[in-house]
Image 1 (cartoon, rainbow, N blue to C red):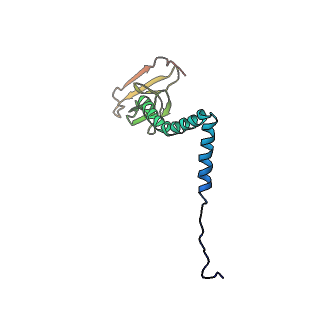
Image 2 (cartoon, rainbow, N blue to C red):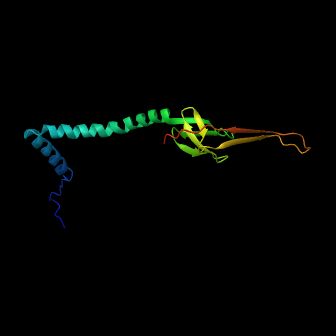
Image 3 (spheres, rainbow, N blue to C red):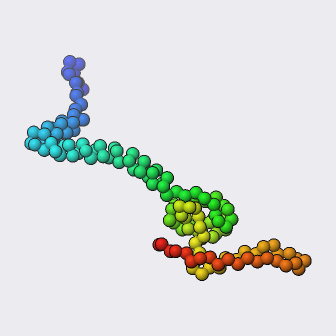
Length: 140
């Protein structure tokens, strides 16, 4: 128990020691001629702030150059892909090569393209078209 006349004033300086240490360290580095260290830390801090912004705009620029939109040459399904990549059409499963001009079938050399036109049941003559594709230049 405390007598009525005693002083119970308590001061809390718990955060002051940390700030005094930081201020003293900065003052010591400046006095010792290590200002270059303080400047390099400040430069790193600025770079950490600017790097995400530069990365965002750089990624947008790269994406605008390399994102290709087009249709599947077989089933006309709308597609999106990255330039110079191979993919498969989600509708007809045709392997496709993405180029600047759009999507092209990724067929091996010597593939023969065949298309049949209207086969009737009454025995009439039917037309069948056979087209030999030129060899594909493989730049991979």
